[in-house]
Image 1 (cartoon, rainbow, N blue to C red):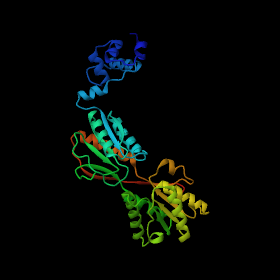
Image 2: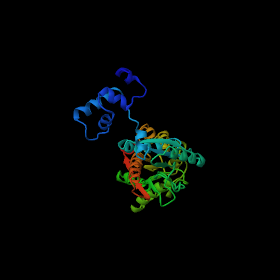
Image 3: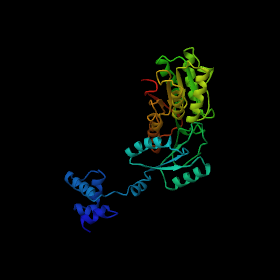
Image 4: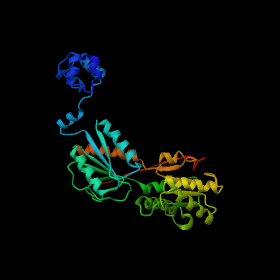
Length: 339
């Protein structure tokens, strides 16, 4: 087969590269794998030939020969991908550096489906697992597994597992302190679903900062509801009716905040001049698409994914780890608090 024909072939082998480069198969292998014992000119000729022929080594076969598949599995319950996609991107950043690939499986909140995905991934001989929940409440551990597993966003209920979770409490503190630094004194909190650990932790963080400054929320408490724009609109109308002098609103999520912005506009209140608005999640489509853009607490999902990848590599190297790691948040300031 000629070189142009090889380049068009579906599968180019190491033997083909060696033949076209005019070297032996062992020499071609050494050159491609960066091993010693190959002259610089020969190595360059082999690499150039491999590139021309679009040669891709069988990394799976190579990894299995070394006792590894070169893959990880990521199982998620996050149907919308809000948390799992950025976590996956972070994990892939780490995996790419180690020449690993990641299989994504959506369990859709179904325990049976999760077990099926788990068995399927283990059957593929993945080298590690990342388990992503749809909320930060503790979830049931998958128990003893033949490969290391890291729980991300939703922590495992077993202290012997390793979990990585966002700092919702710290996020609440960041949001409240930012408003106080801007001179806001009459602050309300329109929170998400009370059944969520994330909602309660964010409320606690806000309350801690206000209490430290001898202040309290407008209405004397946070108002729990649901994670929706409709809840944000309705709660804002009621708040302004009962507390027309409020000058800031902490929103439990970016979705809620979008509803708050709509309601404030309908009530002829300017943001941020009359009322400053800060929220959580820094969900790109909501935060940057809002008018004005939303100041939002970013939970650092990609950083959590990168950390999960790093911890998996460490576990694959025999480093035993357990407990819960809390990932710090960061505040992204936009026009809803600062003109």
